Image 1: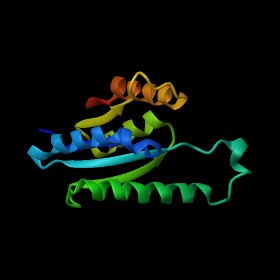
Image 2 (image 1 turned 90 degrees about the horizontal axis):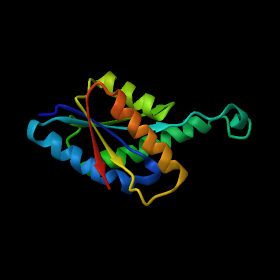
Image 3 (image 1 turned 30 degrees about the horizontal axis):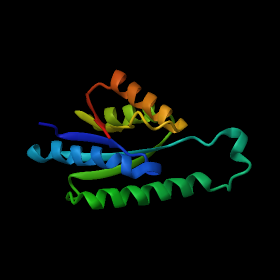
Image 4 (image 1 turned 120 degrees about the horizontal axis):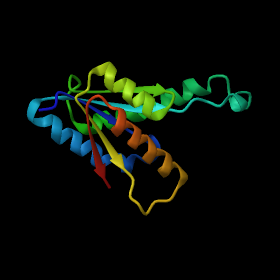
Length: 144
């Protein structure tokens, strides 16, 4: 079935990712496939750079890596079948680049409910749309 599955995780809303994680584990199970979790950190705007500590991006990356390590551990998958990475840049571009880098054959992502009207919902929705349109592999969008 699917051998390499990529699951983008928004660490600001981990509850949203739980259905996608469960689906990815189910899809990987029959073929002993691997699951790779990715979190994308935004670039620090140049105009804010002088107001943040010099090691701000290092701190952000460390916090994201630690949070993703917990997500990986909670899956219960053996280390050979679960991994994670933190990338920095545009969300959908980095998801697509990671999928290409690992030669993913499936991307599993969560979708926001229509009732949510937060601004980041619109951005995440548009990112999911870009991933669906431009991915070179299958994309499964899990409704919440």
